[in-house]
Amino acid sequence: MDNESISKLIPVIILVILGIVESFGGLYFNDNRSKNDLTIELVCLTILPTLIQPAILTFVLFIMDSWFSIYEDFFINSFFLWHVIAFLILDDLTQYLWHRFSHENAFMWKLHRPHHVVEEMGVLVTYRNAFLYYAFMPGIWFSGILIFLGMTEVFLYYLPIKVTVILLAHSEIKWDRFLYKYKILHPLAWIVERTISTPCTHYAHHGLTSEDGVSNPNGNYGNLLFFWDVLFGTAKITRKYPTKFGAWNKMKEPWYVQLFFPLIKSKDSRSELHSIKTDVDYDPSKDYKDFIV
Image 1 (cartoon, rainbow, N blue to C red):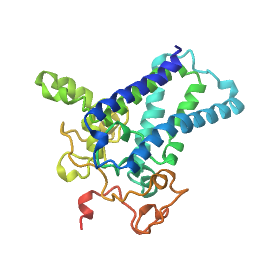
Image 2 (cartoon, one colour):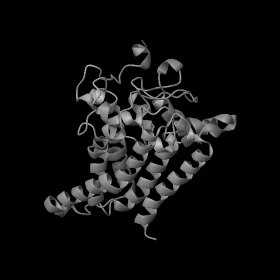
Image 3 (tube, rainbow, N blue to C red):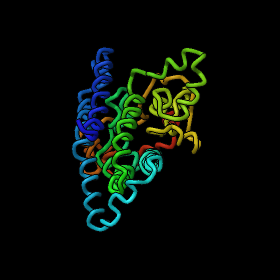
Image 4 (cartoon, rainbow, N blue to C red):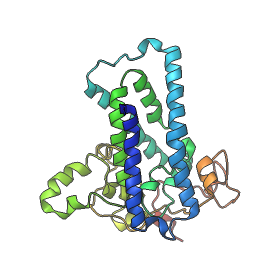
């Protein structure tokens, strides 16, 4: 099996294993996760890797080959560490900024809200976003450019590592608990939780309100590296897990409205997805407690 196939297969295997373990725990058979939620999750898991990402990469490679062909494989012989740094900055850092922007801008929030209106965690939550959220994500476009410039080999290692970390950060398995359980592992925990996203730090991002002392809905944005949150002051580390998840505006429109907005809009005037700008727009910069009636 070639390296490209292995690179794509590893995340699939991790996803399946985590999904099976979570299923045995009863995660997907309770009342909190509706058929609408499962439809959103399964459609996103299907469309993103098979259509959106390949289409963007194909388009970028076509443009680069047509207009900038002299730069093809320009960096193929450069030190591999520079390739790693290039992906961490142009993919992972830009994704941190894109994610953060989606919590600070009302329109971007509407594209990101499917990721947060679900009221429990699990590996299937990972890619719940409107299609346009991913279609314009800078990191995917930059990755195509880096591949054209000759950094394919590093990308084939970088991608499965990043996806695995993100899947594990959303999973209900909470793999990081053992780091906090044993005192001898606390120094290691200190390093790990400030380097990569863990269930503890990412659960906090999905928590309903910071009023619980654990959640950080407007922070903990990191995907692969949690270090970006530490660097830019958006980190909150408590070594505890929230008990309530979601967003204060929990109105759950049909899956096709959530995923295709603004191409398809809600027919309900009470919904923030009724129009690009409404009188009931969610302000993601404010915490849940400000809106309790």
